[in-house]
Image (cartoon, rainbow, N blue to C red; front, side, top):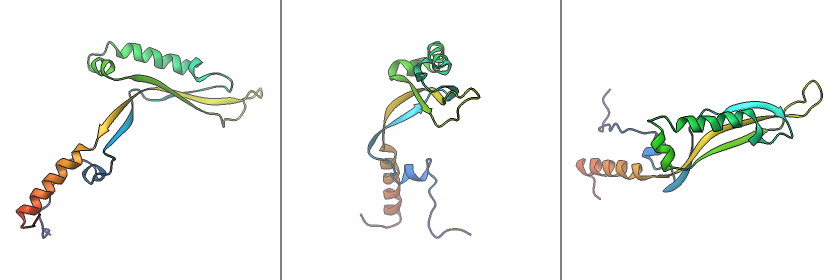
Length: 131
């Protein structure tokens, strides 16, 4: 069944097209898959093996031609977090699940919605709509 109006195929998700984002925001992007490790509760997150492995991943990425330019143009951080609601181990030692990953925080703009708005405005004018 053919619709009564022309369909416009535009790339992006519904929130991209409809302006579902604020005009300027910061988005955090994982550069590496978060890794996790169970450690004793008092262990600082920065002293876990997972944290050390993530530091090594950052050093290794500096030699990757596809990602090295990005690493030099943005601030890369090693984010850590933990969940201390783990049961004690068999010796009664309290534990936590510690995680680490390489993350960049970058500003994003909502300019794509302006392009889509212009396309929809042109389509409305072509259909005889007044502006």
